[in-house]
Length: 382
Image (tube, rainbow, N blue to C red; front, side, top):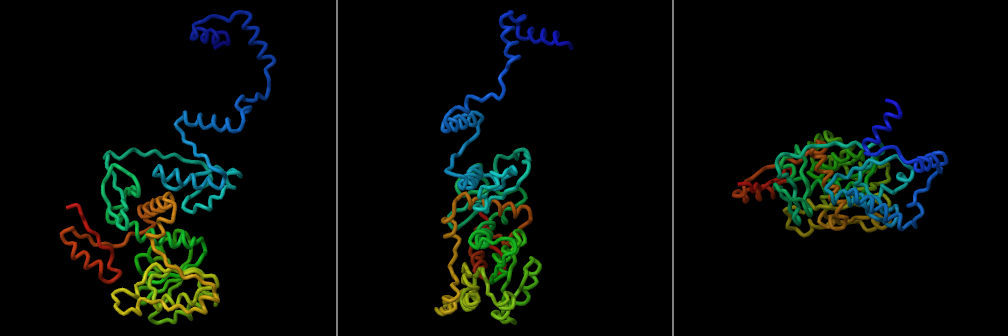
């Protein structure tokens, strides 16, 4: 098609003929002497007005803008936005120096990847209802609902109701102790007592995911197989080994830098005596006092000189205290990540026994029994 025929087709579409001579001359003059390096008018505006114009243009396209004081506040704003939209804490970032300089490490729950973003569209489930986990005070239940609010979390496909019902207290305890309170990184060492317990097994699975190493204290030799199968690095059995001697051997006499203890009593006190200088032990349970009536069994006899000279820290830890001390967005992101890890098989849910509501007395009796028999669930569906 010739140039003239193309122009004729354009004029026909505009329902007009050729431009008058004066307009043709004006356009030819502009083409012949067009200015270079045009400066947009918006760049001449004061900075505050430029920001307002940018926000206005974004909102016209149904976008949202959050203004922060400085770059240090950017990670928190991203975490808050993702949590408010019930989105997983994962972000893809362009590999730009200014973006890389932002202190993303201040938000360890936010998983950052540099590269190109990929959009995956998924069709909505034909049913309006979805499974969620709802947390009420210290309790948790699973139900079906069309509303998502407060401390409710969508259960990923592939995760059954019993697994979802047990996905909060122990898993979040294990995650918070290791990844938040102790802030363990790849290669760090952690000592844990009752390593074959429900929380202990979850700690071992998280260690495989985040690549920290574990010293695991158990009281029966047959539990060692459980620990080894879950990737535990070192095992100390108090039934046939000297705890202090083994800890001195494993740490080359330096002591333990980080520990979590759910036994307390004499065992917890011995761990405390083996803390490294400025080491920290978090005590989140007291199994040694289970079914005890002797007041002495509720004590953990710390050796004061050792604690003083090592400047060690022995601190109580309780999930209902930890949760309110954290930003809601971070707790929601952690819970969402844990649900995803259960769904993907990275974490394995504890074995469980399911009882109808009419058999609640038997369920309570079993739940108060020996540790290690699994979790007891009440089924309200009937």
